[in-house]
Image 1 (cartoon, rainbow, N blue to C red):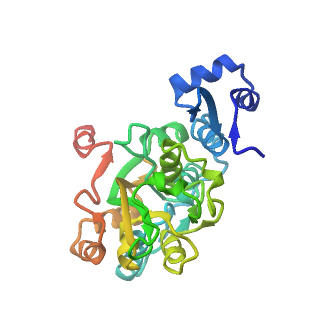
Image 2: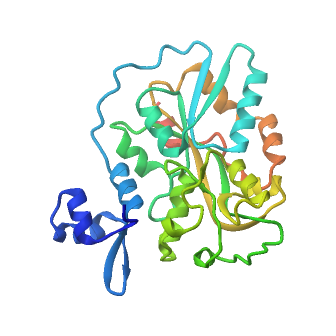
Length: 309
């Protein structure tokens, strides 16, 4: 299988004529890179683009049962979120929160299919300023509620002392660099792929690019043990494992809840907990989080919600 597709390949893959492919590049953000005057398309990014632009999903056959003490969260993995779930379980003995680590896109789809009460996501828009709205609008006929969990710093995890001298994404194109990766459904992987494309690096030629691990901490362990020279991850993991860190973006990490489940008792207890001193103390144990907006509504805004009520 080719890792890069030509305009003709993409046209055949999408069932379109070649002129329409050029229109999709200009008008719909079809992932593409121009090398020596010729358009080339990373196949994995074309597949992600098709998934992200899919609409009219069938309605789920079943819905979550009425809330009875089991709070299900699915989506993007995060150390502070994991610790917060533990805090929730210790505080509320009549409730149990569980987490499904399926990545940001997996979380949105689990929420749409009514497999969970909340989805955790940090999917960056093309404008690199906002998060999650565009992706949620493709998945849902009615926009879910978005509540901020935190902001956190994304970048590259590197061994202590940065022995390979990696100072920018471009350096990953040098020979002899081994990377470790996250799954395609994760926001971290999507950001990593975007940065590689921007640097005109053929991702699938990178040594280790196909080696995927489940969590940010797993990326850190691969780098710490020397099995990889670099991997995409967040600053809190670099601090926990005493690794070097090359920052790329501060990002917004949100919780998404469908409006019909927003007032479930477990959902409300979890969101309320984000305003309390115990959660703030928990976040203070890490480096690389900003929880100033934690627990606040992103959509609809708190003001508009008050006006609507």
